Image 1: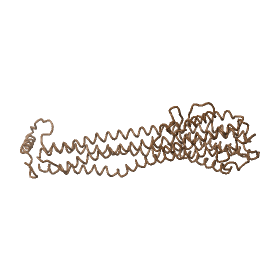
Image 2: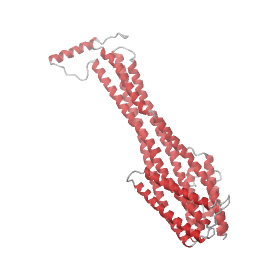
Image 3: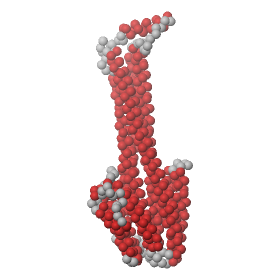
Image 4: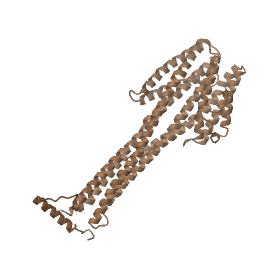
Length: 492
């Protein structure tokens, strides 16, 4: 019978009465599974409700994992790793500024002036302390990183004292630019040795440990998010399948084409599955973008900048301490090859090789060129504008050419001219380095923006899911009860 006046099957009523008589007479027959329509409906209904509850639980847990992944990268592991790189960069710049002050001697008007160099030194000292404090705050209690941070703080205090003493002795001597000697030179050597052999290696170790930790956490979190998407699909398929079967059973037994509440419940269950699944896939993509196109280039370029600053300090030491000039030149060349590795002999040959390697911009950098900038040029990350990369590469080549000119003056015995070429004028080594350093900083800022945008997008995608998912699950449960209750009522 069709329409809303349909009645339960007569056979079902007879079967129900037979079961009641058997129970009353104590001769209940052995059966396998439910024999009556109401019992089957109840079992399917309970199965559907349980499946929806399981789907809700899986979705909630999966979205929570996605939220944890975004927070871990954006609010904890990512900032902690950036702080570790900032420590390394600030320490390198402190050494560069400290040696610049000493190189000026009592000629305070060279370049941008001693007052500006001192101001920059104090600023970078504050940056280093701030980055160390941030790294310590982000480190968990009892973590080895926290001990490393404390050791760096202690070492930084000792370095500051040595630099201050070297400056006091240098001022007392009243020597001209590049004429560091006596007690000032000894204190400067002690400070540079502490920086080169203790502080920078400790900062580098802290940097690498933080980078390894963030990579491991990223891989774990992204894997968990993608696994959560698979579990959501599986749970959703089970819930939707049971609801479709329940709808089919009710349609057949009660000869109706459509049970609107149950059909709505099945559709809602599908939405509860596909919606969160799409969100999880999006979150995994945002996490990948934040890590690979944002954080990784930021860390690599930050290290590039720090190493570049360190070799700039090597130039200062090369002029400050001619007795160790060969050592500082070797250290300079080793650091320069970390930035951009080309096949060349000596500092002069290196500058020419760099100029040739970057002559055609990022597109002209071939597989033979290594180092931080070589890898970035061959495999630019999303967010790296070609014009920005080209500016960085050309700036580095100009810096190397200015260094080549500096060393040529020293070899010709024109030491005073070398000091002036290093410190004074718009084409000086220091000004050329500042221009190059500014281009690297601009590129880092672009990648930081990519990182921040990806994290913000991930957080925004998850916003509001706290109430939407449970509301949808409750709605599915209500629809199931609304679709089944009238049918069961017909048997009363």
